[in-house]
Amino acid sequence: MSPSSIKPPVSSHAGATPAHVLRQFRVVFNAVKTHFRHVEQAAGLGGAQVWALSVIRDQPGIGVKELARTLDIKQSTASNLVRALFERDMVDAVRDGADRRTVSLHLRDAGVAILARAPAPFAGVLPDALGELDAATLARLEADLGQLIKLLGADADAGTVPLADL
Image 1 (cartoon, rainbow, N blue to C red):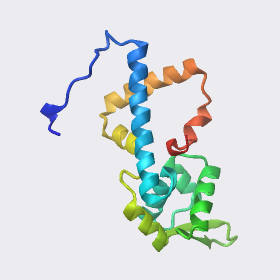
Image 2 (cartoon, helix red, strand yellow; image 1 turned 45 degrees about the vertical axis):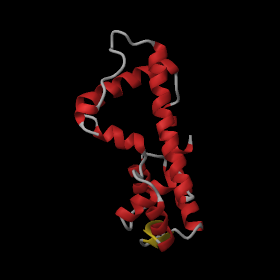
Image 3 (cartoon, rainbow, N blue to C red; image 1 turned 135 degrees about the vertical axis):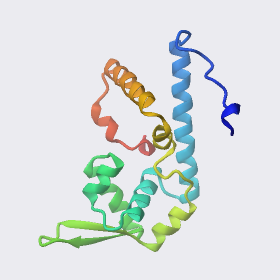
Image 4 (tube, rainbow, N blue to C red; image 1 turned 90 degrees about the vertical axis):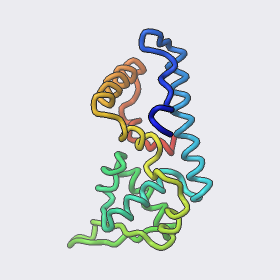
């Protein structure tokens, strides 16, 4: 698609209504849901697991703590992802260090095969699109969503749940 074929937004800021913005949220959520549905159909795994596999592939030897940080999820959530991947023989978890508590993760052949079948982007379409926004737009979006979250009285910990798990 060429830049000249991209249509401008339907409504301007002055004409924005709660109904129009709600419709935009629906479009975003449905795009995310559709992508993760395609991932699951093609790969046979959930989107968060596929993303974790891609990170392990790209950073061989990564630990669970670093994986959690990279995926921006709780360490316990990352541990659960790794456990499921380990049980399906997709990753190796090698105990390192003097006390053997540190685990380094490596992709196995089954994990490589899953990534070969899974549609990109592995992190999901929303993180991919957000990464394409310029800094000013991203800052505005962050501030505006922060205000909306505050009005919702939403739990901040909900932000550490992978979208694929919602």
